[in-house]
Length: 166
Image 1 (cartoon, rainbow, N blue to C red):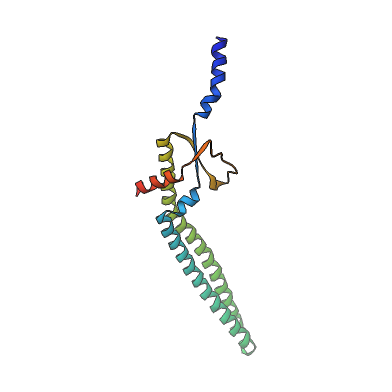
Image 2 (tube, rainbow, N blue to C red; image 1 turned 90 degrees about the vertical axis):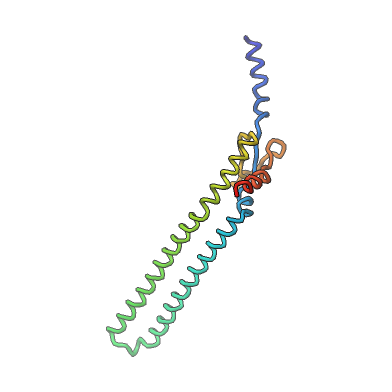
């Protein structure tokens, strides 16, 4: 009985080395996906549109504010208050538009990126199952060191799997 336990303890560490580990840079793989490039372009275009709209609103506010400062001395008190309220309303509208745009961009990014991320994760899982890997680690997540002798770079395998999923 003692010999059996000793034998099991002796060979237990060897079974750990028989396990396969893989690694990849998921961000790099994702950035090479055509659908990611397209989605990123759409998101950047929408962000630029929002930026231009806000710039136009800010320019209008600046113009009206400058105009008010020039004509303020010739206005009666009622007109001054109306103009000041109008400027405050414009400023509040710009702030609200900025917040709305940020939320819209986050929603758009989530809508566009979720299917791409899911596709990548599915490809990694498929490579893991077909290759018999215990773990496939993402080096873009900040893993400081991965042994090249104990872990295989599966980036090309994942890219091939992604091409199959098209």
